[in-house]
Image (cartoon, rainbow, N blue to C red; front, side, top):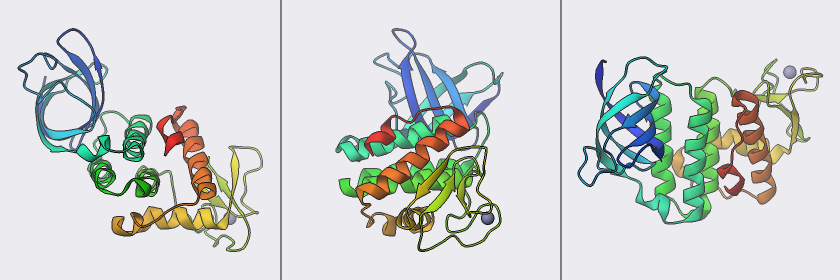
Length: 249
Ligand SMILES: [Zn+2]
């Protein structure tokens, strides 16, 4: 099987045997992979292990048949996001990041920009104040959707490009991935959410602003609830997956 070196982010781990783990990783060069890490639970192992989610490092991976598990041969941890374990908002924010990547990013499809976005988001979540974690996690989610081609500009109708109302609640189509004007509103497909103007503005801002500006955003509970509903419905629509951690963000 071909052997590759790549920077990887560990997304999820579970025990496979007394000595080994199955590890889901996002590789910068190889995409999302499911790997067997033989011996990772032994006291001496080549993984800085036992492996745990949110480890980021340089890995050696052997990838063969995409239908079968790849083999994680080595992992040298280069970055540890200690702050993710320091507060519940950071923990749930990071859990939302990994849930969304696992749900929406296809396997064995290299997307370096997605990797960089996920690593950046975890770094920010580990560093920002607890009450900035919600905006940071939502900013990640909206950028991920845009990178994967699911989300358009959020201040215009995704069908005709007309600017959406600045005075009235906005129809947001999960199926189409953005706001829709009254004329373009789907009559029969997908669920349409009514979002307040403030929510649409917040989503547009979070999708595009510098991370330094994102960390200063404190969303009202009513705005956060609407963003959360859109994200949850989107994950369900696109991947048939429920988001669990996002309920607590
Ligand atoms: Zn329209």
